[in-house]
Image (cartoon, rainbow, N blue to C red; front, side):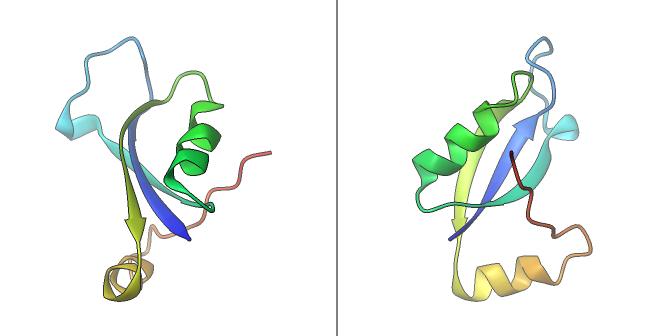
Length: 71
């Protein structure tokens, strides 16, 4: 399943909507997706959203749609 993760790229600053970034990850569960992103110490996760059906197809049309892989 594909998840859209909204995050801030710094734990030191207060989260602001204007600085929120997003990434797409492939994982079996929301917990697994969150765990993968939390492996990067500076990422402050705001929200993890599962993408399915029409919502996933819509997101795939975005030029920024790219699955992020963690090693």
